[in-house]
Image (cartoon, rainbow, N blue to C red):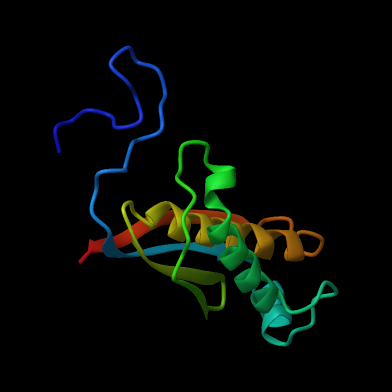
Length: 149
């Protein structure tokens, strides 16, 4: 890395990166984060007892949809035709861990899509539980890994 920002031109203005000459490669990214909730809220989620419905099922679909629309949300992201994206949840007594994985064959990466998937899945959990839990915390959303093959 040369230390220069790729989304800034020589005069300091924002720009979209030109990926036209880059080769197509298979790329994979994994992102994670978690949502801290009360134990009683976690129990309702486990029992599918929320008034709004299947919290984790709806959050998974929301995250997948968000990954597919990342370029509409993040201004300088390229629109990508994602090959595969998935979201999984690990439910604990006081939190739900969220993990997304996204794969593409393209000229540019897939990490923003994986991060967006986790972010929107977490926001959906928040939205579905906010009426019964006033102390929800979304935390530690991060890129776990990215690979180019």
